[in-house]
Length: 339
Image (tube, rainbow, N blue to C red; front, side, top):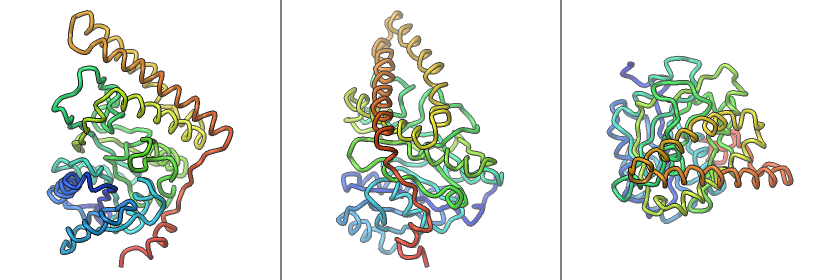
């Protein structure tokens, strides 16, 4: 594996929005600084929180590898990422959640994927750090996407995929030149309803703009993502599944159901029935949580389907409510990008 960063180095973008995650943010930055392949820069993009912007500005005032900047677009994760992309200097741009830490070779594995010039995106594996210290017995691994982590059913190894998962992902800069940035109005916005799928929509749009593009997941590129106590509860599980359905409806409205639900059909017809069967088997064998996991999978499917049905109805009635920002526009909004 190459010991140097290809294509002008790797910029890491970490979008932040609340002082409640102060220690997590510092831990995320420290994990980037400890990489075996050093990042060209770390960009902390603050989402419309002046107090956090000021505090981080003071914290990293003397730093030559961390830059703190304000989200130049509307509130939300997508616009924050677009701001980071616009001002970054690397030929590869990696994204790390503000409540996650990356393993030492995270960027090295990402960078290795780009030795193939057709590779436009490389994602990794995200492992949960449960606030309670262990996975809740009822929580099925097939639904780890609910807490922003890699879920059972994704292929292992270094494989080609339809889309990468946004909290642990990287893109070649030319991917954004070809497809534009992340769509605003579809992804997360602080602590509001936890919508998602913005990276799915971007990846589908990218492969339409560049039919020869290759998107990979390399599960050696590992990060560890905190799961707070509130997200270990069934109420959050249900809310997040419902929001996923709403988001998937927006994506399908934009790119068509065939492509927008391609991976989900395989997941729903193969992975989830097998998960229910394992849960029932564990229940019969008196293993802890078997019935709960089987029930959670069924509830998750029904709740997601309900969100999708309502989202589809709204999308047909009102049209898609998100927009794609050209990165050049985001760069202009930020003041022309880095000097």
